[in-house]
View 1 (cartoon, rainbow, N blue to C red):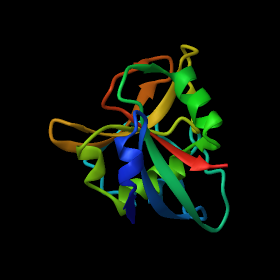
View 2 (view 1 turned 90 degrees about the horizontal axis):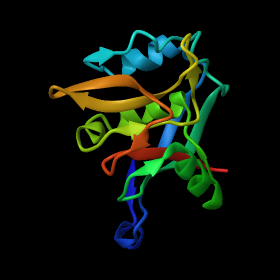
View 3 (view 1 turned 180 degrees about the vertical axis):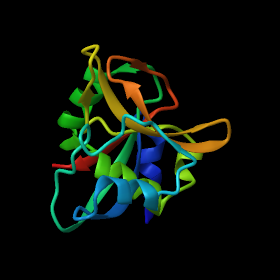
Length: 156
């Protein structure tokens, strides 16, 4: 369910609010399948991105948008100062199921789930569109994030 706060949207840091229902008892593969993505990065596995919650959870999540280029550290600092934690992969996947066309508007990052791969880089999951197709993908955590990116967060 999408809740838009027009006052927040008018601020420099705009945010959209969602109520997400997450079934953490589902395996990651089932969560991904429920999203009906056109393609999925092959490194998004239960081994690399284990589910952290248990049972069925309902969370109020927000998408933070900074309207400027930001670093990963800036995003994490701003989320923390606002009283939020970064969203995790199961919350990102629930967002993709419950709002499947949202990623067509902008890419959405979940910093709360990170995978350190063999070249010692860190990747974070992302919902995005590539060639008009919905994709569950990975992006390098050390990137500078361009203006279109949104960042999934949950109140602490």
